Image (cartoon, rainbow, N blue to C red):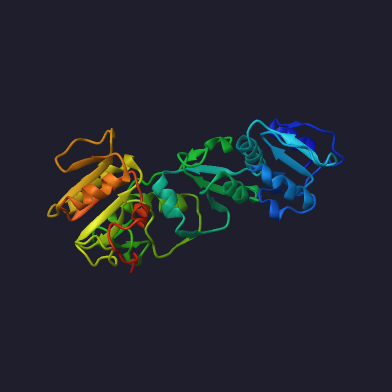
Length: 330
């Protein structure tokens, strides 16, 4: 990329008069910089290493000391903003079609093998930049706007929604589903029936855009994620206990998950834990918590088959409730 083009696209300022006028690659790790690269200095302490490794330019948004006047020193008001402007240009140049979906559809798509011209965006901005910078012409991008800034794209479309059900559920438990799709039987998938409508959205998207794909064995996706425990709060293997903690980090999904549980497990004793001051509908088996410690206290002092815990992931179990065994999924 030519220096003048970089400055025009990012609206950054060149603070010196360098000898160079173009760059080979954009790099974020100082140790990986090679001669001719442009280095984005998210950490000022890495600049010296990048210069020694042959960087032709340093992009920064704070105060730095110019150590080599022959290379370009480029100041921007915000490094993330500069990256987004570069990506927006690249997406227009490559005629990329960008589609939005919700968080669950996105996470399900990460477990499906699809053709190379479909890119599913996830991770931080630097990871996204690496995924998109070398993108092929007229590729398709799927992303969730609550996770990834849609301003990266000049225009976006919502994924087309199916008009009817296409998945036939053959057998289901609360946390596993056996189903048929396109005359193929998928047996005992670690996919809660709650997620089947989201999977239908994803598969319809593939079909509508004629994207080749292959379904693999599903694994938990950090939504409505079940952890089986015994009465001593020791973690047990999947399906080996009737006492289950269910973690849902997205509070917006809790209402529909409560309805699902009450419909498909009316026999069960259930409790629901939500953050203090959340707008969840009041009910007798609802508990509010202020901290992770309060979550643990509520669980230890309650009787239940299922405990649906909103606003956190199972990572709170990294500090065991008691002496516990390692979680395994079978």
